[in-house]
Image (cartoon, rainbow, N blue to C red; front, side, top):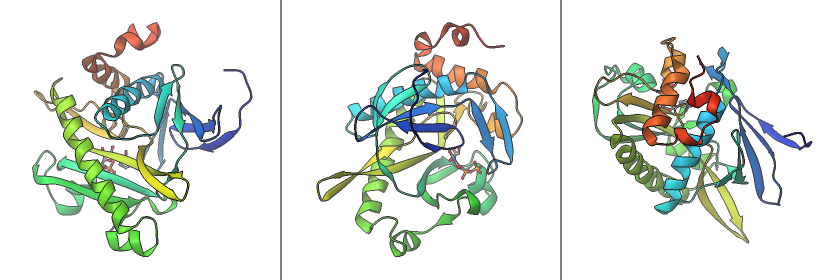
Length: 252
Ligand code: UDP
């Protein structure tokens, strides 16, 4: 796109531009990958295109089961039109199997199934490294109310059930994922909807048969074949046909 647009925000993996109508934004998916609070960086050619398409697919499916979210429509290979929201400064993590920071914190071997799905909240603040917080902090600092937290938890569990089934059906185990929510105003009333993205950047996805990692841990842990793994997720979801030919043919 060559038209000049106002940049609203630039994050590590995405850029938000002003949308065509009030209350809308354009979400642009970059190829940049970062880990460990941006201490590790790389450009993974094609990642933005794949994540744009996977997130579109997931958000559309979730909307169909009544999980309201910010996605309106995909505009092109790297951009989607979304609803503008006030982002709630929380990373909502839902876990089914121990991995990553939970394994470290509680000394649980990676791959240990959890007794039940666990939801955690982290305060979205890069300078602080997104610290884990409790409901007490969330309500005391007015990031969200108790009612908001109840809604977010109910929605997160619903998303987890749906995604577990969706990925399970194509031989992928949903180990954990991170989502974000935003507030939309309708007059004096606000509603909380799912925002951001759902992609292999924000989920742990393991092959159900081999436990091979098909997600961002391939980048974090230098396992190689990052794009190939993201492509495999898209292929299993049946959405490779919507990718540009350069990605369909394999980038390497
Ligand atoms: N996650 C994310 N962004 C973050 C932190 C975590 O998308 O800034 C995702 C991560 O990909 C995983 C889940 O949230 O699917 C749980 O991550 P964890 O707390 O184990 O952190 P990590 O091991 O990535 O530091």
